[in-house]
Length: 216
Ligand code: HEC
Image (cartoon, rainbow, N blue to C red; front, top):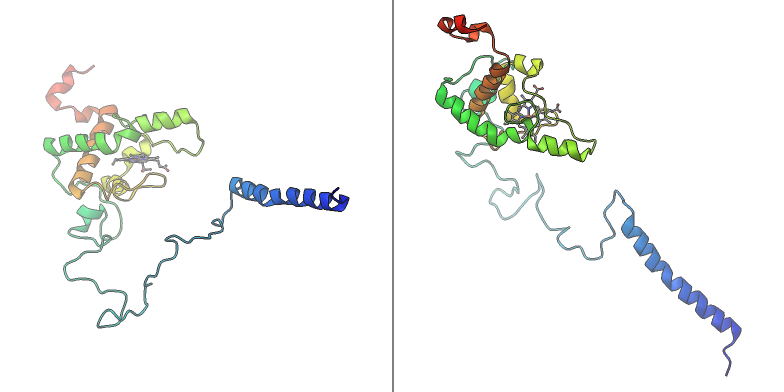
């Protein structure tokens, strides 16, 4: 028996329509949206937890937020001499004298740490041609901010406390290295940065008096 024309037509339309969800799903997988995708299975997106200031019966005082345990120190708290640990005086200005003794041992330590932590971007010599910077230059991504040359006049004229603060907290596009480099090593690096700067901008006064005669 022959299928009625309208039935053939209806089937063709239904088959065509059945592609619509597939096409829509495909399309939505391609476009970028600020909101997360529709979630059918929530996985661990939504977990029960206590928020600050909420009550919690588990503790005798009924508070979810726990008071600080004796002897613990919050990360942002200044421990010890602030000039040593922050590079700033009480009035907030940067110190311009080293709060640690600068000797050969400190400089060698600074060289060692600088070559690990800073040279990848700033280069062994501080001119800003480290491997990371060179690679970023090659990729030409446009969003890359090149590392400042440490021999720039502005950096040379920064007080030591400012450079210390740059290591500790980062500056503009440079990340903070405080969490990775302990206080004494930060000063060691600052001392080494000064040595690098001096190596490119030496003055006659830097040469011991009895050796000045040998210079031309
Ligand atoms: C991941 C790359 C990177 C590393 C590693 C890095 N820096 Fe930088 N540094 C930068 C960039 C980028 C800038 C420029 C930031 C800007 O201008 O936005 C900069 C700027 C600076 C400046 C100039 C800041 C000023 O006074 O204007 C100093 C000083 C400096 N860095 C020191 C260091 C020292 C010391 C280390 C090692 C502890 C270090 N940097 C590690 C990328 C880096």
